[in-house]
Amino acid sequence: MSQVLPGDAQPVHDLIGIGFGPSNVAMAIALREHNARVGRQEAVTAHFFEQQPRFGWHRGMLIDDATMQVSFLKDLVTLRNPSSEYSFLCYLQSKGRLIDFINHKNLFPLRVEFHDYFEWAASQVDDMVSYGHEVVGVAPVTRDGVVEYLDVTVRSGEGLEVHRARNLVIGTGLRPLMPEGVERGDRVWHNSELLAKVDELEGTSPSRFVVVGAGQSAAENVAYLHRRFPEAEVCAVFSRYGYSPADDSAFANRIFDPQAVDEYFSAPEDVKRRLMDYHGNTNYSVVDIDLIDDLYRQSYQEKVLGTERLRFLNISRLTGVKETEAGARATVTSLVTGEETDLDADVVVFATGYSQADPTGLLGEVADRCARDDQGRVRVERDYRIATDPDLRCGIYLQGGTEHTHGITSSLLSNTAIRVGEILDSLLGRGAGPAAEDARTLADDKGSAAR
Image 1 (cartoon, one colour):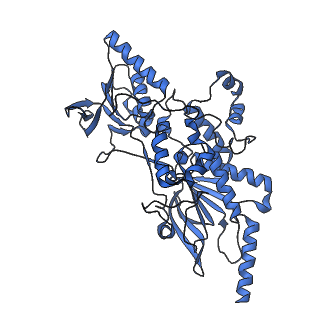
Image 2 (cartoon, rainbow, N blue to C red; image 1 turned 30 degrees about the vertical axis):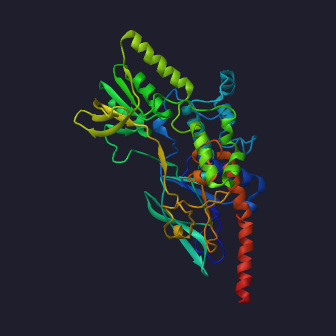
């Protein structure tokens, strides 16, 4: 997987990946396909480190009837390489479900099925990843004032080890976001942990859940808890009149096209802001119309029957929550009247989204060489490489955290296959691979002789 260079005491990878979620699985597949095409002499060497003990993608949100919100054709490979053996269709064929899926006449698989596809794809390249390995730091390796390599310190059950790289690709994903001042606890959850936490309630008889949020995950949580606990009341709290439908119409969906990334990247800042305002309803705080209709139908049916368990506390916001001996007490305030209502609940679930961690958080002093814009955000080139000072010869690529430069697809699956192809092209263009390193070493030797 790596190469020993003259004068170097340790092997050097062309690329080290931090994190092994869907984006870096796609990166590993793109590398595997490239290396199969070019042969060993021109292969790009790479390895990935993932702190989880095995592959996992939002496991706490894999509700049994939840579906994907992107087409199965936007898998890890198809938009980059339609003939890839790592596609969702090849996965279906391997599972004996291809014909069944076609007969289903649906572009949007179950989320649990797409997760199984991700696991299947990750298993095809598991020789390129070390699970249970957490990257804890990155340090520059300097020669004649120039940063030639990056040393990546990794912690595992066996202690610390250091791996050297010419380039990094950071794909560490998103972090659950809680409202300011609210801490997670035994009865105060973020929806990312729903399925793991809800099992702890087995054998009990919950009487009330409070779910905070207005997006797809919030609505899914409401529907799931209402179905899972048929005796419990489920209270949905949000500041709107009702859930807003996601705009997945054909023209609006062009915001997810590969070409849209080019247009967004080159647009002036004021145009970028307007595009996000125009098309935020394709992704943010919106719900699939079918789910909205199902919840409204259920609510109306309960009113007719006099068995209301679904409560929608709209035009309101949660202004306080604290755990009690029996559960949690949520304070809900009307945005119209200011009236406060205390709700004693078994559990309060916050479906309040995610935040992107600072991608430079692991880079240590290397972060000082990364350029930032006037808002303090890292500057990112079109090839997803952080702009750095010229003395840093290593490429640092981002898979996520680029919404301000590349648009709405930064943390979504829609453009993953294309993005990893562009990162690979950049790596090759910047001289990744043994042949290129041999040329650099020869040039350095000639320069030394001349001096």
